[in-house]
Amino acid sequence: MVEPETRHAISSLQQQIGKLAQAEQRRQLDEQVQKMQEVEIRTISTLFDKAATYTNVFVIGGYAAFWGLWTATKQYLMPFQVILSALLMLASVATFVFFEVYKQHCTSMANIKRLRVLRTPENQSSPEKYLQALKEFQSDGERTNVQFVRVWAVTFYITVGAALAAVAVLGTAFVYRLTSG
Image (cartoon, rainbow, N blue to C red; front, side, top):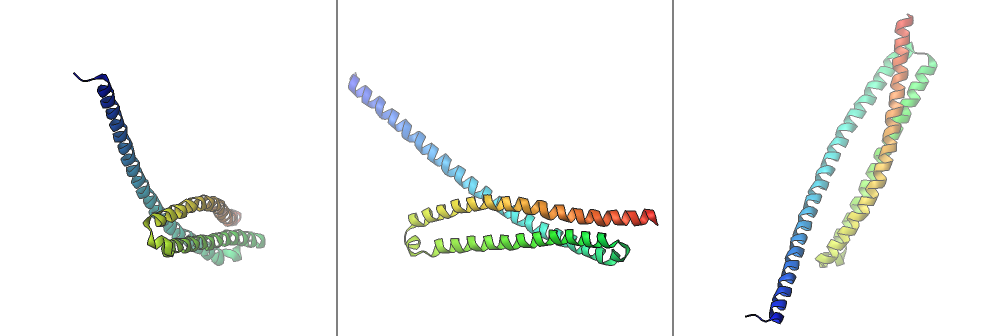
């Protein structure tokens, strides 16, 4: 027969083993979730880059089409329509270009910071220090991304709004000319 103290010790040991097993399972789960999040972030980043490239090509094509139509038909427009549509589209183009310059600046600064993390001698000599510096870089990058998205949203509405207004001026002028003879 097992004495009560021994039974209690065995029970306590089993509880501790159970807690350790749960902690290990939790650690493994956390590790898997972190890996999944990293894959998701890379996927989203890749999709965003592809979408941005596609959008830039589409926007540049739209600007080219607008300016081509504007140039070919401005003699049929009233002077204020010519000036208003050109100013609105100029505001759209300027906003788009300024944002693209801002985006390149942000990207360059992020790449420079990442390079510093990689090239810092203490980070190169210690995997732990490198991982800590990389985590700090990523955390800083996440805060920067939030700010970047806010700038992008404002830019998007200005760019699209001004372009649509310019197209509306041209479209209204064309319809007016066609209906008035």
